[in-house]
Image 1 (cartoon, rainbow, N blue to C red):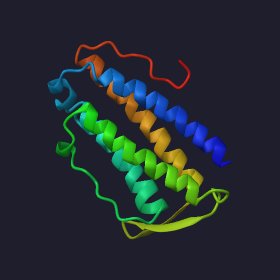
Image 2: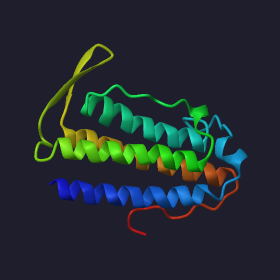
Image 3: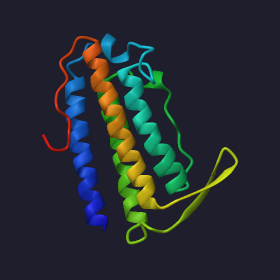
Length: 156
């Protein structure tokens, strides 16, 4: 099963790479400009939120690690986003290695003083689907800013 999840994550990163290449075309100002109509305010903020969600679920809850979550303002360029996602790729690799052949094992943790359970497969599925949800928002926000979005789907 690990091979399947690695292959699936490779597809996610290929799609992410297409999105980041597209974001390279944005002006620096458009990359960070806040728009209150979109949940996290800016393209940069959405990208950082995607990464910190991986940190929260995969790092903090899946791997039981203390994570250092960057503030939005700490990342000011697409290049820095790529570097941040490089660290997320390592985190995913370690997660998939640790739970190799145990993806249906029940993990227990506390969120807001509530007991929560999830399997490693559920955490993995959550973060990758969450990324695609926000990727759509990023493309919509870019359209709102006057850009022509590209196709970043896995099958394109």
